[in-house]
Length: 292
Ligand code: PSU
Ligand code: MN
Image (tube, rainbow, N blue to C red):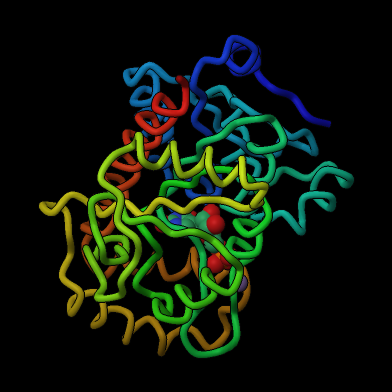
């Protein structure tokens, strides 16, 4: 039920740095055909940075670690369900095609012995009605380094950070002491700052040596030129929240992302792609710093 591609499995055997990538951002977070272009671009970026990419997803019940372009096309066309760790056994047993979120991707990557995973933004605590992502619980349990641009500003940032603390997820700001919020640049919530990928690697290894389980969340701000003003996003969110009476559970995040792209005339899409690229590059540097 689990298939690791030959390139990934050889890289792991030879201690070459591997960077995991998720499929929910492709299948549910970005529109077609940009999602395919993003897949290609991120794979290429990882290779240019001398690492091996491992996109993770579930194709008709089979867990794929290191998906090919054909497999990603098939997954997107299959209208996959969105699965966190909790739903993985359901998708695998009933032979469903499924896109993996941060939680399930982190779990599967770590299961395959991959140490670094790059994404856009993690799920967290939503505003309003009780809705907390599995991502946080997963990061509490799984030994992996996750690079993200913090979390989306559509979430409740303060509560998300408090939850990360409750669940003992060490959150490090890469060259920043403020938690980044996706397209919007920095929030005013403080986190621990690190200056280099060497420091991140050292902290991760130390964590392992101390027998402390769980992930390290590396929060990497979007490059300044691609930032979108917070007030502008807030204006859109106000509109979107009024439309969302019947949107619940797993649909919430994809719905908001899609509407933001429409309301911003594609600007949030461009920023989303840029921050993904930025996170992938940092993840590669961290993966290399882990190899000493
Ligand atoms: N952030 C993005 N795009 C996404 C996601 C996050 O910019 O598509 C996805 C990730 O896969 C994340 C998931 O794990 O949304 C969180 O979903 P939920 O809030 O339903 O737990
Ligand atoms: Mn949720």
